[in-house]
Amino acid sequence: MAKNSDHFLNAAQRYCLPVNLLPEMEAFEVKLGKKNYFFRGACTPLNSFISVEISSNKFSMNALLYRAGLPVPKATAIHFEDYQEGLLDDLIADLKFPVVAKPTAGRLGRDVVCNIPDKDHLKKHVDLFFKNCMDKYNLNVLSVEEFHGGLNSYRVLVFKKKVLGVVLRYPAHVVGDDEHTLNQLIEITNQRRKSTNEVLAPIVHDDEMDYCLQDLGVTLDYIPKKGERVFLGYTSNASRGGTFVSLGKKICKQNKKLLIKAAQAINLDLVGFDILCKDITQPMEDTGGVIIECNFCPSVRIHEEAEKNPIAVCRPIIRSLIYRHPLSYLKALLQSRKSRAYIRTILIVIFFGGGFTFLFH
Image 1 (cartoon, rainbow, N blue to C red):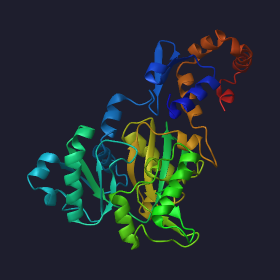
Image 2 (image 1 turned 180 degrees about the horizontal axis):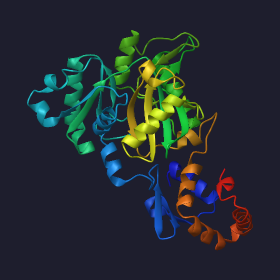
Image 3 (image 1 turned 90 degrees about the horizontal axis):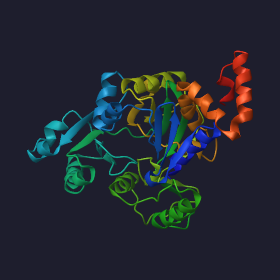
Image 4 (image 1 turned 30 degrees about the vertical axis):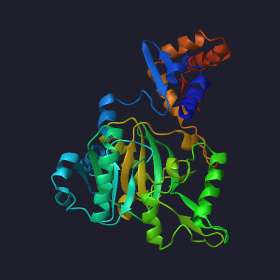
């Protein structure tokens, strides 16, 4: 079973919920009353199908948030048919370079290229996308949006009008030692990443790295000074060589309110927002911040497995099922030998009017 599922499973077992493992599906099931709740990987039963379907299209998500008055990059969609008819110039006329090109579907930052400097480079990338990726994603449209550089990248997990966790994300980078070249440092760093945490995929050499090196005016033969941090990309996904640091729930009230509004605009109870801004503790709208993506199956591992400030974000998510079915939950506890002492405590609390709340921390 996937690691994200493991975290949800541990939370469910913590609260003595009736759980059925489904190894053939790499999933598990929580049964309360007449309802079956399935968890598989990072996917949960908490969002409606139509909301997931709409938000899975990155251009549609951008348009919905823009319509709701929320800060997003200016974007357009390039359809294969329009591109074949030579309409690229018209479609990107309102965009300022550099830009980002990404599939309207997909996850983990795959096939996303940031900081494309001009129309010629964009055309090259669009050509490659329609040649190599149309079948891969089963779609014929590419999203192109303005690139917002020089900002920090954050993942903010929102659940039912609450922020559960905030993660600061760094793009792929290496630290110099005054001895090894960038190419050698990438190999050394990848070996370290592999032994540190399986969430951390290796740093890869792609077009985005070339754009970044060009910006820096260096090549892979460059030898950084000791302690010099050299960024090798713009996409901050751990699956593309990025790293992350948990900030707990550190976020300003204005940004919290804004992201809760964003979750409501796309009708997702559980969502991970990818944010670019100077500082998540300062209002985004005052500092040029933008929402670049939403994730309807957000990873909980980056919050639960952080080296510093880990947060058990799965617990409140699992507790929400208990609040939906309190009587079925009590019945399940009565049928469990492990929870008989737990039941006595619950009944005492209920008798004195305390409810369930104090138990679920």
